[in-house]
Length: 121
Image 1 (cartoon, rainbow, N blue to C red):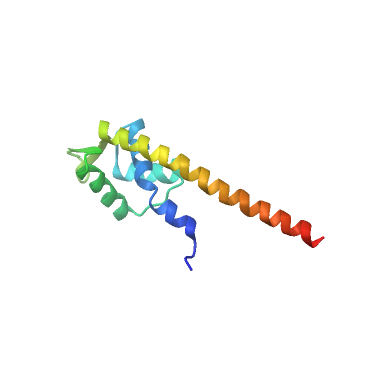
Image 2 (cartoon, rainbow, N blue to C red):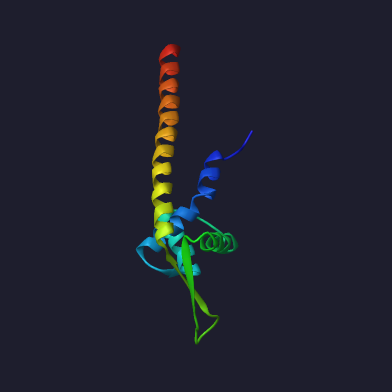
């Protein structure tokens, strides 16, 4: 039996969260990592973040612009594309449907528990 099923949902959630953050403003990797945790409640390790960014870029959902830095390595700034905005909208529609499904299961479970307590009295 799978343990911690909710983690499966969250593990795949950081890419639409990246798109959302980039919808607000262009950003770079470590800023995205920080904002994913603070604003989207998404924890992702930096390697997975950069793999996700590379995948989103390869698929044309984001662009990357490299800027020279005077203090450290060059900085890559990511920006959402029109294709990325469309994908984000599709994600939100799918997530809204998922929330309905999850809420139905939660409600059914609580209703069952309540009915069982009533039967035991």
